[in-house]
Length: 296
Ligand code: UTP
Image 1 (cartoon, rainbow, N blue to C red):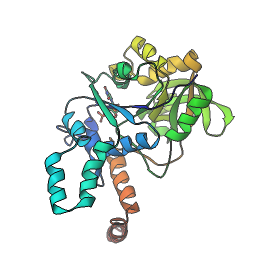
Image 2: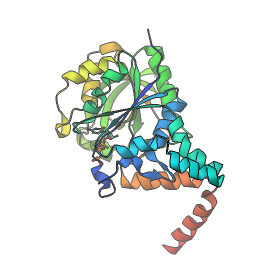
Image 3: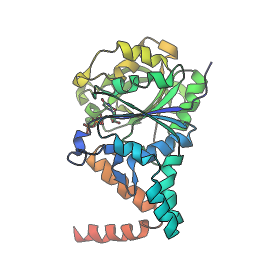
């Protein structure tokens, strides 16, 4: 039996050390991608997939995140007085998106530990996890097929992406077998951040998961792993290799994805998304052309 999937958990309690000093006093999820903070794209993606109950796992500097998804009466009335409906909408939209909830992680003891903090809120329901710094291009859809696979197989489903082999030590890496359903595979094994020479494949776990609530019990028993952190990958490995609650499936995503916690990917996300915009695209394209000729 599958239950209706309406809950999204967004871990956003990491330290964001790759982006210091920008993240010294602000969570990396608040860094703007063009003119919206990265986290807003992630919440919008959850809502577009029917996940309207959003629990954010926050850490230090949580105020900016909470404030962004709240109303700001003084700013709203100032814009109303000016009659600027367009800007007013950009201010009110985030607060109207979803039913937002927050819980603090305490200490950043790893992604698995952050997800475990959602247990009380999620209860005995399946739920999705969307990493707050992982941005999926709005033109592509990863959660839709994952939710469909979860419903069909009544099992947990994780998103995978093919990566260059020399980057395996940045990701959880999967050993898979085909189930004869296109880009859906069965997870046989997982390993967190292996060196390229030890990696069993080039299929990396990216920041989207549809999980059965049985993961909580497993996480509760999971000891600190790589980096002395409680790893979600280790708990998923246990579920996959012991066939717990239907085991784990992987959906190989072939669309556009940006890790906004990584400097180069962050810049790429801004350029790509700005190029799509009617107000910025043509001028930016012109400038990029001139700039690339100037540098030759
Ligand atoms: P990262 O691996 O990107 O780590 O976390 P990080 O600490 O955020 O960033 P760097 O590497 O120091 O720059 C992946 C996701 O898991 C969340 C992060 O917020 C991010 O969305 N996370 C990680 C937590 O919520 N809690 C943790 O203890 C660790």
